[in-house]
Amino acid sequence: MYHIISIKDFDREEIDALLTLAEDIHKQRTIERSLEGKIVALLFFEPSTRTRMSFASALSRLGGASICVDSVEGSSIIKGETLADTVRVVSGYVDAIVLRHPREGAARLASEFASVPVINAGDGAGQHPSQTLLDLYTIRQSMPIDTIDVGLLGDLRYGRTAHSLAYALSLYDVTLHTIAPNGLELPEHLLSELLDRGMDVIAYESVNEIINSLDVLYVTRIQRERFPDSASYLNVAQSYRITPETLSDVRDSLIILHPLPRAGEIDPRVDDLPCARYFEQAKNGVPVRMAMLREVMRE
Image 1 (cartoon, helix red, strand yellow):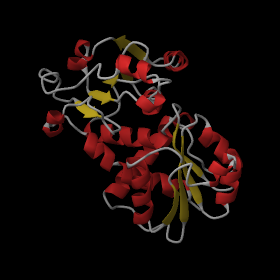
Image 2 (cartoon, rainbow, N blue to C red):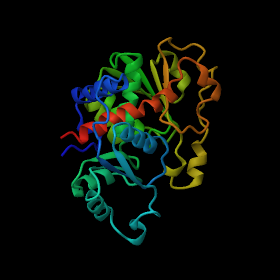
Image 3 (cartoon, one colour):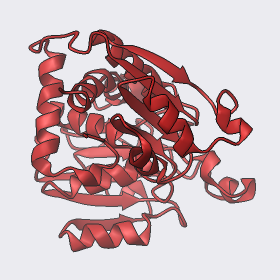
């Protein structure tokens, strides 16, 4: 059975093949409605707008249907049912499960109990492979994913999108520049893994030190919900902000990405600049997730 749990489960060739399939779908070169009659459960035990809606849109465009759980309060988990039992039961109703869960490792656990394919739509501070694939897809629209300088800015400790993307980029010839507030740097285990894979990783305290040498700037928000208390969050909140002035002398090739939602870290005046690609990035979630759904339910 084909699950999509972590970007670490892919090699470069498999990622490139999925991105090419997404591109074919995007350009309408692939037969649509190939999932006619299929039903997918969207189990979202954590808030989501873009991921949940783009999976629903992707499935609908392929001719399938979705059934949804939008919160723990709306499921039998509130009565004490385990995730394993929920997955076992839901597997009998659908052809695939898309799961978002606040606990790291939840998607892997679900895949062990499901009798249908499972796609991880984000598990705590762990992985978010579908976001990473659309991030790579958006970069590839502008430039080859090789011999480029990529900056990761923001909450790199708790940010699962940054974790997934950093690992995926280690499969390519990329120099990674990490820029994070004190205490929110990449986890040591991930940094060690990237270095062991031969990736060039350089850390900075301020985005101004490196922004003029970047091809891609990937901005993330400080995630209030991941902090143990509000005092810890307030210590680092609003510690960086990208403005038109920040971008006054950048490379012509620079693109700015953000998994969204943003919470003040990108000035709205940046939205109209040619380098701003985050809304296009969000839109790319539909063809990329169409490709993923097609692959996991391929007969």
